[in-house]
Image (cartoon, each protein chain N blue to C red):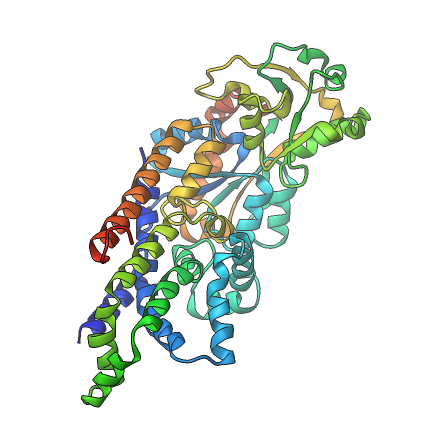
Length: 251
Length: 223
């Protein structure tokens, strides 16, 4: 009976569980997409442990973690998302700050970004990119700054929202927008083939972007030693030096 | 180039197609026999994924299988089965998502077969099962192949559902379409282009193969 054989074969395949690669799965806020590669390489050379980064907007990653995504460590772009995870019991401990982000205004055009507050109102600036103001902490910070300067309402017709900071970076890089609010780490991204013009947004205009890290329950249950090592490494002096090089404050 | 997303896509499409062939054949046969209100409703539901936005399907699957509550919680605690952010979940979603591509062609082909074919077989004392396998199936070979190939090709391109319930986990749910999106997000256009080219070539070959096969099997090459 041929169809019985086919059925049995199908069942075997369906029940076959895909082979898991033994590496630490780290959920990473989008602003870290370049620095994480350097950190991973450095960590691997020191410990031999491989890290698989999954990059996305912090809020989206939190939603995935709450719904059972098998991540071991979470590097957020703020403190409130990892704090919420701690409150709901998805982490073993409270989040710790590993870096402080720097908000910048950035453009590929040689325009007067230094005086961006006047510049954004000009006719020549058609579109301004901001990351999602609820799921992306750098988007939240940009909104705060604009509200403080009373520019948000005037600017709203020009604003283009990116799903995460990496989408904003893509918009800036491909000249889809005249300028965008992003993290300073974008300037230090590897493989930049274009000159970027940028100005740092005054830190007093937004609440500090403290970026927190937590070891998740999944990591504590399955890769306790590796997750703990990576967590400790992120707070070590060698990781701090890398963060500094990529446009973050670590003190 | 990291081939794991391509491999994962092929694996997902392969398993989905196999499962759908097993589920779809009896289902299509049952739907092709007569009409009742129940059958019409079920057929409508099966056809839904053709027009339903994939994100809607993804959203409801996410709600249904989230380990936070209800069915998903029960599955996680009692059977240790997690259907969100796992490969098994993608298989389930793909089976629902690609079902119309398997059922449609097979059901139409079965309905177009002359009734005398099965009746002749019954009068010769053959059972329903035997008639279906030895008489009906060989007569709808072309449609069967079309259904299998279309199902496979359609699953290759899945994106919205995967993004909703699979996320972007390497070796688990990062299929080629997700890898392209991720690469573009990371401004890694070289990788995005590699994956896109592979998918483009793959789907082109599949569609061409079906065209050529149909040409040789139809009475005139223009059919």
